[in-house]
Image 1 (cartoon, rainbow, N blue to C red):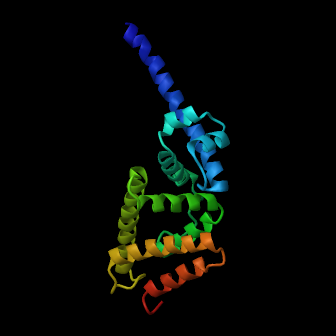
Image 2 (cartoon, rainbow, N blue to C red; image 1 turned 180 degrees about the vertical axis):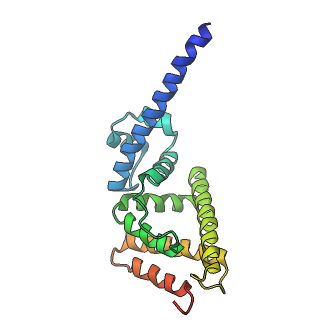
Image 3 (cartoon, rainbow, N blue to C red; image 1 turned 90 degrees about the vertical axis):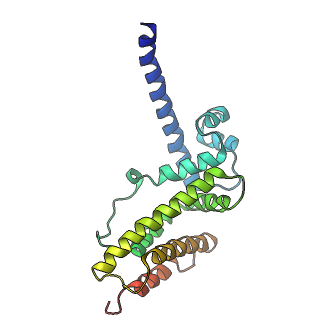
Amino acid sequence: MSEDRDRPRQRGAYAKGIARRQEILDRAIEVFAARGADRTSLRSIASAVGVTHAALSHYFGSLEELLVAVYQESNAPERQHPDTLPVDATPVEHMIESARANREVPGLVQLYSTLVSAALEEGHPAAREFATTRFARLRAEMADVVRRQQDNGRMRDDVDADAVAALVVAASDGLQTQWLLDDTAPQHEALALLDRLLRPASR
């Protein structure tokens, strides 16, 4: 009987914990969108977010886990702008649209670059898992789109779909890094050129 009475309290505490974690994430996204991930620590982020260092450590464990959670939450479908591209848009066109949206949140772009850089170093398991999983998913999704567009004549059919997907991801990320360092870098123009190069000659 006592155990049954305890269950509603446990469920209530769990729900409150989920809500509290979400509140912290929402505020952290605002902080990172404005200032990026430079010169940060869990303690300084906790101060900026308005929570205790202990609370942040409880919900996220480490700075790296927080950075991954912030980036993933900021890119959740419900937070994205409505997709105005046609359903048959090419992978490069999607990257161009993403680049436009990212210019509004340079701090989150810088946070992403920080995570990818950390993934290349030893001792950053959360960042490495995030980056390898993300790249694999993007390549697979884009390769499927490329194959469909090759079948309907919207993309040249003499190129390997998996290689195209890897190239588009590399171009997008590389140009994004250039833009972070120099906002005059021709990010959109370079992606548009890649899009033209991948279309059939008749287009």
